[in-house]
Amino acid sequence: MEPYTRRVQYYETDMMGITHHANYIRWMEEARIDFMEQLGFPYERMEKEGVLSPVRSVSCEYKRPSTFGDVIRIRVRAESFNGVVLAIRYEMENQRGEAVCEARSEHVFVSREGRIVRLKREQPAFCQALEAEIQRETEQGQ
Image (cartoon, rainbow, N blue to C red):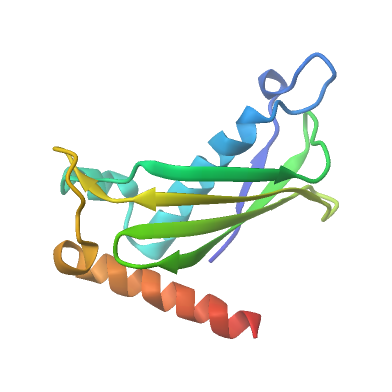
């Protein structure tokens, strides 16, 4: 998967010129949407098919500040998937290759009515693509 890249905007910074911490979570969402598109399953398509993916948990470890104009590269990796919960890891670095944030999010999949969706049954191609990507990342990391 290709990393997601974005430039820090002025409005995303605080009075000290540092990116406000809440923006990293927004960037995670942007990168996750890009990841799903690269996987071949755009989020809009999932929604049209009646599957929503709310955040179950999110955590961020801020490594160093980013500032207006910095180019942030976000590497997204599907960490685990059990058919119900998808865990995603994010590694963010600036244009100098310095880590600015390491983060993780967990997502569940539900119907519009709020019931848990068993993706292996209702979205088997998506599950296969996720599992293949997790396997590829695992082999690449060894």
